[in-house]
Amino acid sequence: MKIAKVESQSKKLRKQAGDWLKELRGRAGLSQVQLADELGFKYYTFVSQVENGFGRLPIESMEAWAKALNVEPSEFAKRLLSFYEPELYRLLYEVKK
Amino acid sequence: MNVVRFPRMPAPFTRGWRTNELTTLAEACAAAIPSGEISGWEIGTTERGDPQLYLIGPAPEHDCILSISRLDRLYILEDGKGQVLFENHNIMLLAEQTYRALRKGKAEIIARLTVCWCAVREFFEEKIEPVVVEPLEVMIHFAPPFAVLA
Image 1 (spheres, chains in turn red, blue):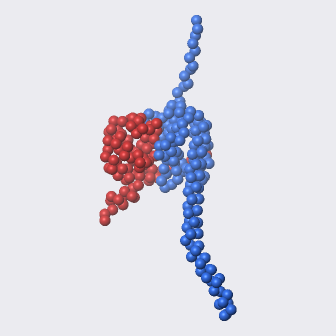
Image 2 (tube, each protein chain N blue to C red):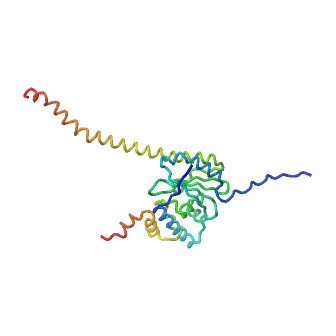
Image 3 (cartoon, each protein chain N blue to C red):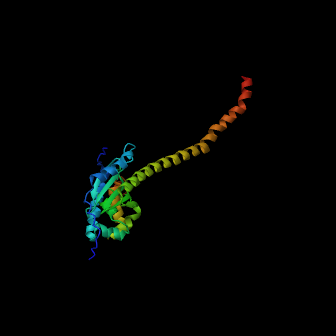
């Protein structure tokens, strides 16, 4: 069986989001396990999934992540939107009326 | 003198994925590839070095639809939103659950399409059909007198 490795613009942006989240976690002085504990996860594997650029933070959990990482939730969500939905971000914040 | 035999501790697993683990999981996913449910896979590790396998969904988003991790000897199957779907020490059971999770995804798509189709049909029956049927009834009513005149 052969499965191709995939590469796309979405993936690149998710990776950038993951790197940014990793940086925030580092600044907050938390390990992946500690962050997962703060967020009430049973395992820390989803933190790794997101930081490695594969998973996306669900909208409903963004506030909890922001608080755990000591970031203002709206700024946190806005930055993540620029990675996860770049076109929507452009329309909302960059296109002038 | 009695000698107490302690059970031997099993050797720790290797840090990365082993070939037989990947083969078992690849076989579980094989059916989902031709139908386009998964477009590929990626391997990664956690901060602690625990191996992860990500099953990637179709283009253009290429979202992670399932993630399999191994923490020491425990396998964990999660969806792309971090929900734990299954956890077990047995790779065969994990492969079976992975297969089921992929099939469940497909079944959900079919169910959604069915609901859409039913909604469209109902809309057609409620709104369009009376518009089409009414003139037809009028025509049937007035057609015979006109036929006599012709």
